[in-house]
Amino acid sequence: MMSSSSKLKLVEFFYDVISPYSWLAFEVFCRYRNVWDINLKLRPALLGGVYRGSGNRSPDDVPRKYHYMGMDLLRLGSYAAVPLRAPTQPVHALMAKGSLAAMRFVTAVGEMETDGDDKVEKVSRELWKRIWSKDQDISQLASLAEVGRQAGLSAKKVEELLELSQDSAIKHKLRDTTQEALDYGGFGFPLTVCHVDGEAKIFFGSDRFEIMAHCLGEKWVGPQPVQEAIMKATMAS
Ligand SMILES: N[C@@H](CCC(=O)N[C@@H](CS)C(=O)NCC(=O)O)C(=O)O
Image 1 (tube, rainbow, N blue to C red):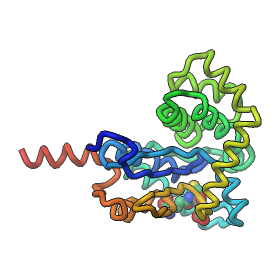
Image 2 (cartoon, protein in one colour):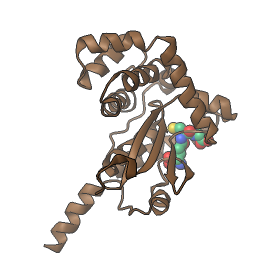
Image 3 (cartoon, rainbow, N blue to C red):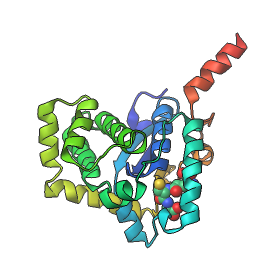
Image 4 (cartoon, protein in one colour):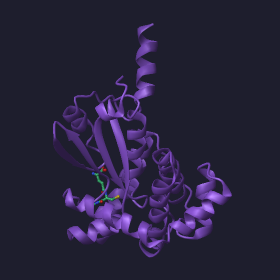
């Protein structure tokens, strides 16, 4: 294990909590950040902005694709041990309500908190749990306040963050990060950028880990690396 994070390979992970495939990749990365020599940088952004900026269409524009995704996500959730469950009113939850307020909140957390990445991780996970597991709202201030508290933030801090999340500096920051994803060639999420030997290698989706590992010079042992290591040790003893 290397001592300084500056020596580790930088991996930027662009995501939006509206994206269930991003949740899968996020959990897998959070497990591998202690296994691979990488410096994982979470980059909260807006999927809607990436669709617009790249001229892409939302998957629900193609009914068969949408239907397939529903089945695929259940399988993947079970494979990766991520408790994915589609909202009962997907059009309302995903399209009408969206994730703008939520992603501004995550952006504010990243900007304001000194241990930004740790809190961004916790807040993002709580948001995903609400929308993609418990069928709960993530658009109302009261919902975001609950998310903040679940992530371990004090009531006072949550109040400050909610206020900050409506500030124009945070709106710009979220827009800039989304633009960075577009500048890397993004058209959907998750988008991962692995910086290897001065080159930015771009990956779309939660199903590219094997290839990513190859590019990073690391080993892919499935979505639950620690479990895998325990199993191997048990077999060997
Ligand atoms: N094959 C990818 C699919 C990822 C995916 O469908 N992401 C959605 C957002 S949840 C997206 O951005 N789709 C854009 C597209 O498919 O062009 C995976 O397994 O992760």
